[in-house]
Image (cartoon, rainbow, N blue to C red; front, top):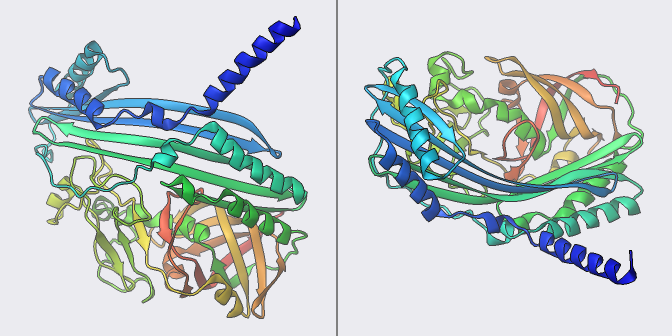
Length: 472
């Protein structure tokens, strides 16, 4: 290749790279008007007695790194149009990802044809008309405008830190946006959009590891270097872990560890789950179950939460106090479940048809004001736990879970961290754990791997049951 041709090729490659570096989710944002037009067309095309349309558009991009370098950069955009038809007391859904008129006519017809061959549903309620719903603003321009180059710069700083500390790093940095529109033939139209940024980093050495993770609607809230620094320090402190016997220890659980345990409670708060006697709260509502310092509620309007302020039928989500000072007080209800259980709908129903009813997805645990350092200083002998993984349910009614510690398990002796220990398997009742909480840290938005994000505090728990030492 001649020098001149090489120069032109390099110039084109550079221009292409620059353009690619400016691709952002914001460029694929559809907006409320576009989604409204789609829903209006389907409702116009539908011949059902009642028609409901749910449109979800998601744009996300992810930069993945390992061995101190970026090895994957992906982006995707998806659109799902889901149509529910109601005819003669029967209902069914059909979906498409095409937006031309013929495809919209076809999906409306498919939903109607499917509904006609379903059995009548005696519990089916008429679809709702327009609702008064409190708006929330969780669309952050800076997050939507984040580019691959922005993510690469943040990851580069993490990799440089890992190189400097003679460690190996791996993780992901993702950004994106989602848009949801819900409309029906009785005049309801609701639109919600938000942005999301997520950064997860693991640092590795020969016999140790450290981990940190954060998510937010606001990419500016993600301090990738601070997360990497935390993971790096955990990794260094985890070197040469010693083995200590299993047993009951005072456990200082950092927020991600708390999250992945209490996340197993979420569906127990569903009215359907209690009515079917599948919930650990069945027969225990109104009775003291946890410690006095445990209060839990579901609140989509909490400043650290994400998610639409309406449910799958368009009912406004209410803030619901679920546990107050250790006593289960309330459940969440879809419209149909509320009618069966003589309660009021709370705006937590899934899209119909469904057998699952409802669930809270914006859980907030009341926190305290004890910093983690004070929890350590006040502990004579215990374990400091960074995170947990491979968690499985052993006994649904007593809420016994099993799983393992990971990425930073430390022995605390006489008020200070004295070194790393090998990881443990645990078998622990969450009911018992929430009865043994001695101290609470401030509530924060926490991210783990076994549950969706919640607002939870760090906890100091007595008599946490570790049953077996692992080999790593």
